[in-house]
Image (cartoon, rainbow, N blue to C red):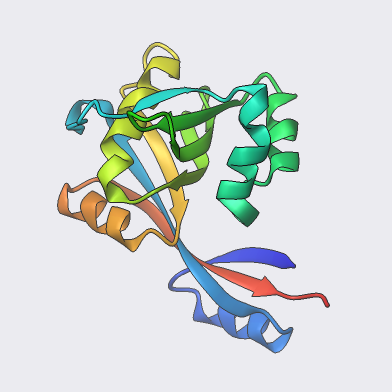
Length: 166
């Protein structure tokens, strides 16, 4: 499978990609989230992924962040792969965080109820001087709605388009 992204308003590009067999397969949002705006429940904890968790997280994230990609991220000092665990220790989210950007992508979480806890947990991995994080997530309209309601700055909304190669 091949994925590409187009800006939501770029109907010309979308039409061109459709002619080559690409089909819409999701929506991606990129928001700026000020750390000071969060209201975490503190029911979940955010930490670096353990080597023994890579396969489990890869299976949970699926195509968004498979185990092979997690291993590639971990081989690069610019990235930190983080997990979010609930009070029972179950993994309810994962992301690649780039402290120098600062941003999370891919960002996978079990719904908007864990969003503030996850982003609040990311803050301790941020470099000094950053009071926000950029979060890019796909197919979480509930989180996009929370971001919109809170007045977070939307950098872009993209349509994900996919071509199946066989």
